[in-house]
Length: 142
Image (tube, rainbow, N blue to C red; front, side, top):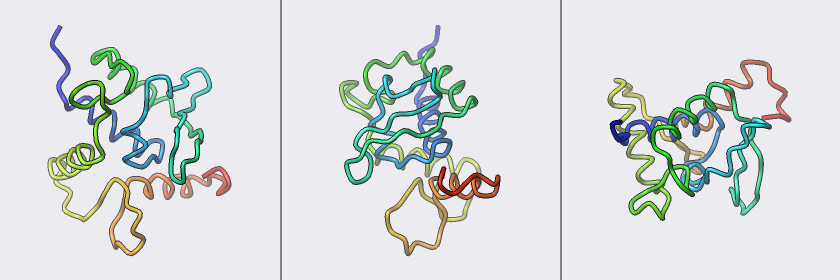
């Protein structure tokens, strides 16, 4: 069996950023045990403000994560860095996002997530919330 390339890891990591509305640092710090496929939830440990929370896990995202896990077999961190005892860094994830954006031919400025509210371009995190609003999701759920 061929060893998994970094593309699959970053595809899964970027998909979880958008698909669950997570910040880059939250994606990087996910552990395998944070994925609760029985309850279809992701446990975010020590998110913004040091608070724990649970976010929804869609069936499509779960399927993608399962495919990634079957190939990569990460231990501990869901998205290990180098060395494997550390998680990937937010910088690595942002570089992967920028690379994917260019490969897709997207020239509009965009980031995974930024805390700066004055930026005039989109983020995956805000796109996630916008798409939920467009689907008439209760704002209290978002």
